[in-house]
Image (cartoon, rainbow, N blue to C red):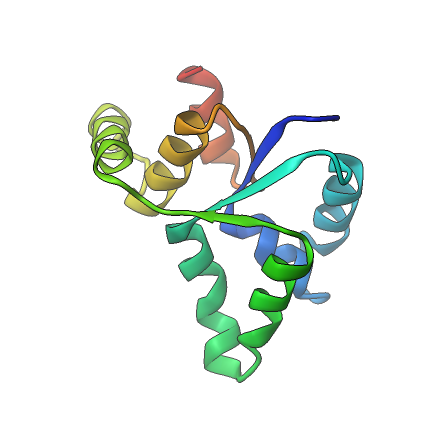
Length: 128
């Protein structure tokens, strides 16, 4: 990919950190392909989503270690991003709010979105 901003959806982080996840192999390959020169972003909403199961199962620190070691920038959801997400959700009724926040964050940072959610990927291509 080379020297760009890459916004990670929670599906990518979840897949990466859970070897039993259906997307694990793909997540590992995608992040290897991204390379160290890419800026990795994670919307605060996706960070929260990626933490749910690990916190429930007692290994929440794994998510934070990934964020810190991979220099992933957790980006806050500000007013403009929240409004953009609401607008996306208003136009795309099938889009869940969490996904709209991830997509709006990616757009706000001019980042390519990396997701394993087919619906989110399709909508992200429509709104470019």
